[in-house]
Figure: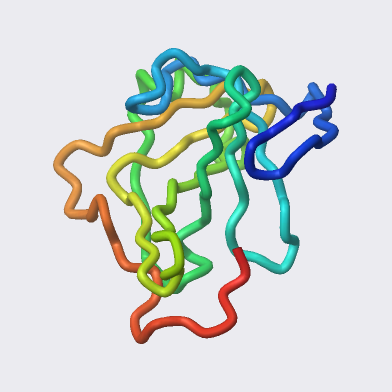
Length: 149
């Protein structure tokens, strides 16, 4: 399928790679279908692109790529909703805030990870309860040079 996106222009998307959010992203409850875009393969960032509103996309990453020690447990109830069978079925991503013109000040939301079952393409944005993680964890300790977004 072809999408005419605000950020990437017209792109071809394999419909088999579309994720269905069974619990939508906070603030975007009207949108449930997204695809992961690998716009720049050298970048630690990917883009979660809405299929239903092509003006909406979120930069996402894996915190470990930035040396952030990050673990959490998926509650049994959510694992059942996602129909998870094995830990290897899980892809977790975190939404990044990249300030315009200042990517060195980028932060990642560690309190609300995106959890995706890669086998059935069901996804949720999980809210971690009683976690000591930050909503705005800095990605770069001493600034960053040559950031590829």
